[in-house]
Image (cartoon, rainbow, N blue to C red; front, side):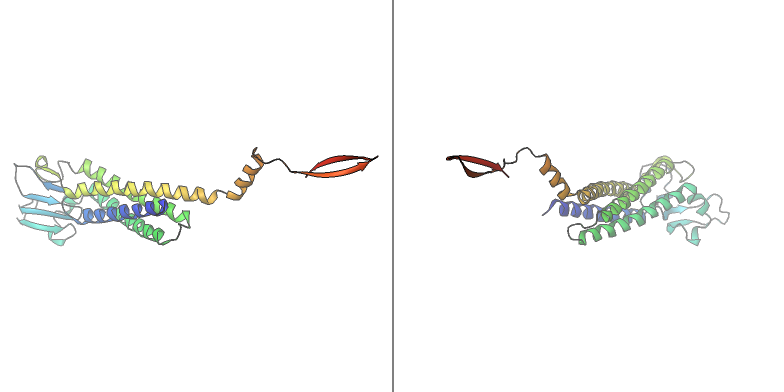
Length: 238
């Protein structure tokens, strides 16, 4: 198997793994979980799009509604809690994570398209693929950094000292790493293909031929001339 084809298969594998982990991290609700003993257990877990409570009553809900179970963040059932849960930094996290998922999907499609080509005819396609991988990785990197900093805020979830990052958050980090690896391999393959396409082998071969010092000397052509009864041998180099 040619090295270019092997690298392309590696890129496709990392791209598929990055997209799957990104999708699972986006859809799951284990970004921030109640993971330590102590305190009230009214908060159970939260994701980017879902939150779960256990017999929780909001202090500003004068109707005394009890929240028990899991809800989508845009559900009308928790409209009283939306301004508290879905604050400005979480909306930024949701936006960055969604854009990362979209770029990861396009990067996976580009990787499949490159693998379908024979002999990797277009370096431009590979470089576009690498750009999509890097952009998706950077967006997910910003997502995990922002959530890692602001997720521990005391004014977000109750009993913050007993909560910690769940496996969904860790899966997002894995997705970011896989996307970066796919991007690095794509840059390597695309730059090699671009340099190969730009290299004029015929011109370089002629240049080396002119500079070569190992050429064979010309063969002499011998002729005999008769003058005044004597024969003279002449050598002519062509």
